[in-house]
Length: 259
Image 1: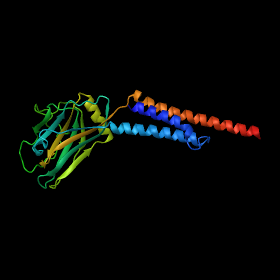
Image 2: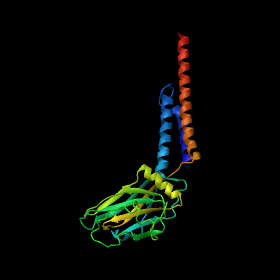
Image 3: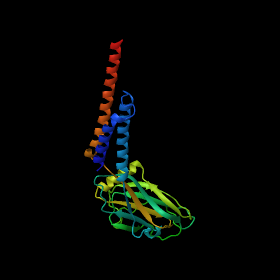
Image 4: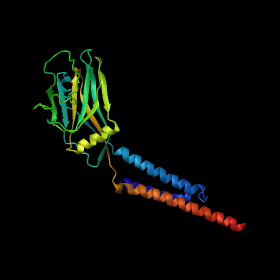
């Protein structure tokens, strides 16, 4: 449909060229024609890109992951993600109205994992003492103290990308982690390796929240056939410019002969 609109507009421009004001001017008509073609090409590309952006959102079950208990470490695996013909151009991990349960030092360790052993949400006790308040703020995804345990949540050798270490007060906030360009590349690679990803969350304190959401923005990867109309338009622009230069040269030659 986009191709047909481009060709129709191009035909109309060619027909209208001779009826432009000052159409017989060797400067105005070709220049106006050229800029109109250029504007048409840019507008059609922008409109096509805007119309085809897709947003995917995922939430764990339960959505608040049991308020992220400080005696546990969690994985959240998301399955059946397809990027066929699509590029990941944005991603955000957000936690609504998150707050710490008290005023003690705290940290929420966040990781992107290539995958996890269990589907959905799973947990592992990383503070068997049950002490309150928690004083050990070690990131157990980085520390290997539990990695040899038979109940550990991630297989050895699984790709693990550290994301962030936010801290919170007793006042609820809407936390959003926007992926960087390098993190988006890692995310796409992790999805390509098995059509799934996982998040690792190690809460070193107890974090009340109203739900966790992961959102991805996907944009189609243009096929070469879809670029043909745009390439043709720019070729027409270049050809028009060449004709204009030749016409100008011919007029200059005539003026010289008349002298």
